[in-house]
Image (cartoon, rainbow, N blue to C red; front, side, top):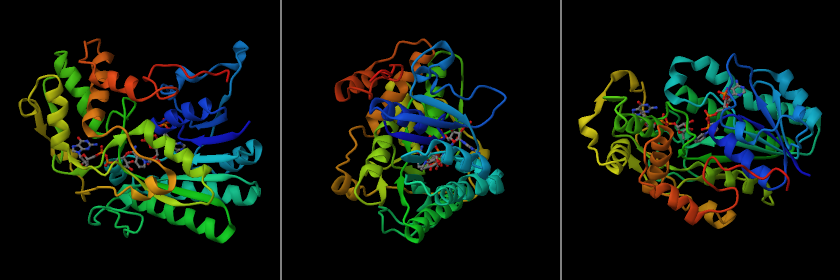
Length: 355
Ligand code: NAP
Ligand code: F7E
């Protein structure tokens, strides 16, 4: 049985990747950080408490990207075949308020893992969650050859992590890869990222629980894809014959305003009646236009996204309407059951644990 260690298992991508790995028969070790409140909501549906005598291939351990000791201990004790480093202070706006912390966790945290791998001497494959934010101000479309131009402490930290991953590959022969992922979203997206903030607000407005939605820059353009499809490519990258750095996105870019039109329009509302601008959501430096050229992912990994912008909005809208007990038009839900099977099922489906 292959063993994987996943940092950031409690986040959006960590939860989907864990479902994928369990469905492929892996034993998954997840690193969670200590919190005074429960932070495992996204993986509770697949966790089995060994105290109940349940068979489980999902094991959780405390650790932190700020702690070299915890990382070195986990890596030498588990001896994972694959390590997916998904943990990060991942919010761009917040990184301007917490620049030092973001540099430490999102940047140096990656070095701590690589150094723990090197010192343990184990033969493992490493995935680094790099990001389109590293392209920052570079002209679109962005490819593997586009020079980085980070525009935030988050992007600068990720750029450091990206380069040090490449350096450990070249210097020490570690099978270390980076996926340069463009924005990817889902019903499990953190509530303060713009897509989820919008879909939750539309549902709350529809339910009569909220009157207005306060946002920042509506003109920024993003290449938004569907998170479960993106975690699949992380796994494919580590199964590839040689370590690579690769761009992952849909090849379509839309403004925040277009997202608003689509989400409000889905339930028959006009966003202009509800959206207000609040300066506090503007960033000191913005990334205006991200658009992936995902040709290499298609040619080398055979990866192509099935869910594009409009479908993504529908999937997220259906989920947030249902969370508030409202009847959803259901287009998103139907689309998921038509296009996917197996582990790619609607969010609440359990992954079979006894494979
Ligand atoms: P997310 O939902 O914000 O999850 C981040 C995860 O990191 C959470 O599990 C969080 O734990 C954990 N974490 C934060 N600080 C930590 C620390 N000091 N030590 C250990 N764990 C820590 O992020 P995501 O959207 O799933 O993204 C996954 C990764 O891909 C991140 O590295 C992100 O920067 C990167 N990325 C994301 C996108 C995107 O569009 N989603 C695109 C490109 C790259 P808690 O649950 O306790 O907070
Ligand atoms: O912002 C604008 C904002 O925070 C998208 C992270 O996963 O993807 C994510 O970073 C756009 C920006 O995502 C609000 O100014 C307007 O132009 O949803 P976001 P992000 O900054 O693109 C990349 C690839 C990552 O790697 C990151 O980890 O939307 N925007 N009004 C707003 N954004 C937020 N959050 N809130 C607003 O009220």
